[in-house]
Length: 356
Length: 266
Image (cartoon, rainbow over all chains, first blue to last red; front, side, top):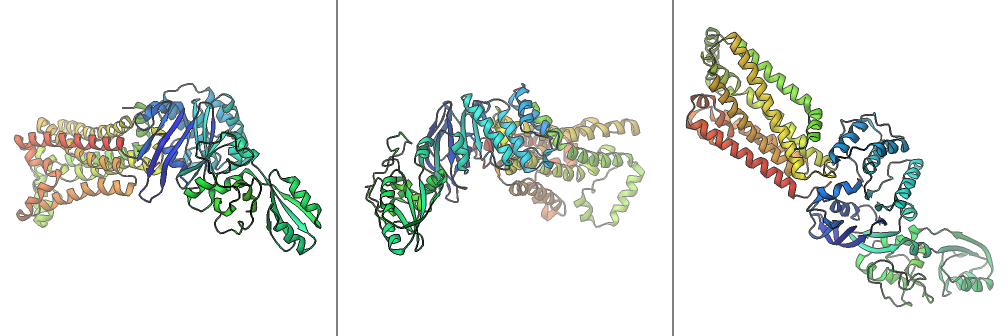
């Protein structure tokens, strides 16, 4: 439904997007994740036909987004990341204006949405709060019941209650087999609704992952407190992904190898044991590091050797790093003192995230 | 042309239109009302006290006891240039560049209306309201002259003068609209849309200062609405009408084409 091929657009500043490739199928909910300035909005600008790509193309339903933008617009509900309305209009005036420009006169869904989000549409837009403007943008994007939603940071400016209402709405649209592209830097949003996520950093897609795969990849990091320094060193020097935190504390990240951990712990004087929840965010963090994106594409991918490695995740070449490699080599964490532990098991990059 | 957008433009910009229209009507009616062949003589005598160049620069050097020439000299040398320039500069900037700079153009582009259609609607709004500004003034002056000084106005020549005025201002609109379509930031579009017409207006005044500077008139489009030449008719008017119409068309077409092709950072 949405297809991006070799899309490249460079700005004079040197930023932009470079050689993007991804496809979003009909009915799929695709997360587009990346930090601010990674190129999310630039990608979306191309999907809506606002900008001329340097190379490559973006198509929606087979229609080139830049050549015939007017043909795809009514299929798309677009919520801009930074919304600017026609400020002199009232909320309802603006929505009527849009309906008329779109030549979609059925207003029943509009009324439902206004009611759902408690939008006060009689207000002049210039007098509206940020949250109210965001709601107006949402109603504008959803009211013509398009097949595709392109949402750029949709929950920004909404209070948690409204964020929930919005996510519920998205889930209903998902059930109606709408195609959704959700650009966000908020992992929970993507985790909750998306089936796949593309991770973009410095204008390049560094990974496209199944959310399910990422969820399985989740690991825990435990803080083990020990009775003496000798045991601390024993644990820290063990083949486990363990890092000495203080003289009495070691951080151990565990994926599947609980048996190894507890076999070792049984021999030591353990005085404390607590866990830190590792979120999907931590899994993603490895793509967000500050290293050279090139090395990350090669080495940062855990899929090859992770427990879920045989899942068909993404379309990027899977990095074939030897298992015994120093973790620091395939981690973008740079100068973190993480890499001095040999990883003897099926440890992968995702696991080491736990050290951070 | 999109009716919805045109109506929205009207709602957003009617106050600017009204302001400029009222200013033009104020000057127009007063100047016609003040016409009195004898008092014009008195006014001409009074102006003779002022430095000749200053009077020339103000466009009052050819005040005449003939009603048509009097109106042409009084209104079309200064008032009918400077106020339309203000209108054109502000409006054309608001019609495109401001929407691009603010990002509200998104809500026009994400509708099944092509960029050409959107830009064309905005261009037509500019040209149509400009025509109305001049048309209303023309009508009011005609009515006033018919009731106050029946038979004294050369209606044909006066209409011709207004046609040329509209076309010259259409060229100015074309320049400003082109700037509005070409730039992402309003400061650049304003620089072109207000700066260039303003500069040409100053050049027109300079060209009238003395004989040595007369060549400057070739640098400014306002030379084409020189009332003496227009009222005289002949090849000057033909050249002016064809030249301005072609230039305006080119500028608007160029602006719309550029807007259609370029990348919009929204």
